[in-house]
Length: 365
Image (cartoon, rainbow, N blue to C red; front, side, top):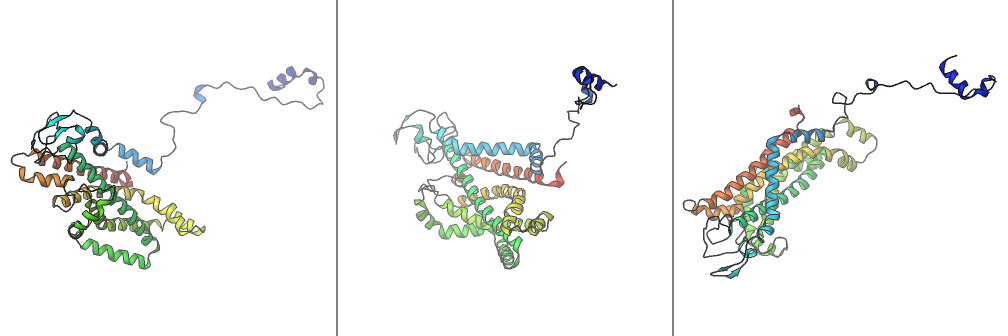
């Protein structure tokens, strides 16, 4: 009699005397299990495969240059958004010769002038000094960075919204829409974008300064032309995004998962929203990041020519323009905004390069 039968007889002695009765089943005794017999846990065990997005983000995090650029961009964004409200509460009141008693909420405002304190160097009161009419350079610089960010944001909203929509529709359906988009993009690429913005800002600039000044977000502080400049720049850049989206859509609609969805009776709108648009994420992010650098340069150039932000408003371009004649005597007034412009543009360019490498499957290890 084996071990299991012995256990059964010991547990049920009354049944041992009557073997004709149904005998209960006892599981065999548990064998001792050592740690060597357990599944291994460690780096050698196969893990759940990461998604393409997770792999791209992991590749991006290993790009030191892109991470530093991202940190620089976040610093300037926080400086432009939070910096003015904090800066206007630092310092005490003082007796101005021309304006009487003024507090930090006044002399740390980008539009406030102290005509008896012209071209001062950095001090405890004016951290980066003053310009040629006594305005705080740090306050104006923060306002200029904010203007650049707002213009870039407005441009990218139009660029992504219009470019991706028309590009996907043209690539998916083709036909007359594809032909119209192709001819329009050819015309826009043949016409210099900056020249178009200058032309539009020069013709409609005065109207914008009057009509758009009543908008609460824009306000009458010289920034009324920002909306016009943003729309003019957006008109010149969205055709390139549309061409990117169209080309990617032409490839995606031939893939097996799209053909399977179409065979299953899925509507075109569902296919576009569930299968086409999500797969455009990488190319849209990379193209937008690289385009932001060009947008910031374009806005600064328009303001430098006097067609963008108007006094008493501030932008990086208008700061460079105002200080251009003082480069021999007060060089820091032009070097400061120029340096900030270079840093911001390089940061977006390096981040765009890092995103492009991260989302490119041929560049991954």
